[in-house]
Image (cartoon, rainbow, N blue to C red; front, side):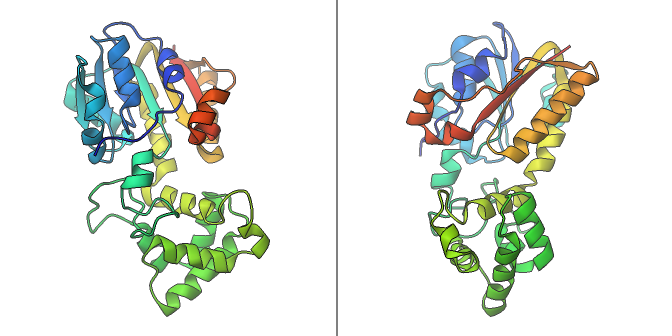
Length: 298
């Protein structure tokens, strides 16, 4: 199956890296391969180190590289492991790093791992294509974590105002029978929130699903570690482009960039984040919440 993912802020992300013909670029969130393919088109002699937790992402994106002279290597891991990936490649410093923190359409629509509340799937929510028994899943979280812990992650990671009611509902429901599928969880959420909330602009399960996904994949921990290691491996004059999709991520990126600028390690290229054009948002509604921030290593 080919990738159906539409890359957000594609040209803006690559153009702001200020690459040259033989640049070394880390695509830390390969996803549908859009950013890497554009780098290959514009800079055929560039070297690309592609990283993704989802092994299937590389296979799905193959068609985008047909006819391109792509000097690209693939690493099935999280971008927080950027240092060890470069060590394996025998590379010390790179010219550009791309981090697109959004969930790809392929994972949302076709993974079968329970990322979407619109499909009835097993409650996994792990970025890994084939999770091992040791890997934490959303099913583990909703069926074994304490009520207070559940409320805290749903509020902290999902910014959900009814987090305590939803956590209470989850604990009561699992006392009757384990919650194993996305639709079972959606029903619990619907029963836990006020009727008026169910008629709101966004689906009442959106924030809880976001929170569980972030918790299962330690996304915020990975982001902080990936940013820190990313700055370390950038050459002087090298740039990092980061696209975030929700306020928690954007806050972490913004704060990290400001701290590093104050330390005299980087300069911020984007004083305000770059957002999608009206045309892009019309063609790809998921780009509405995307924010691109760019720094340059001094």
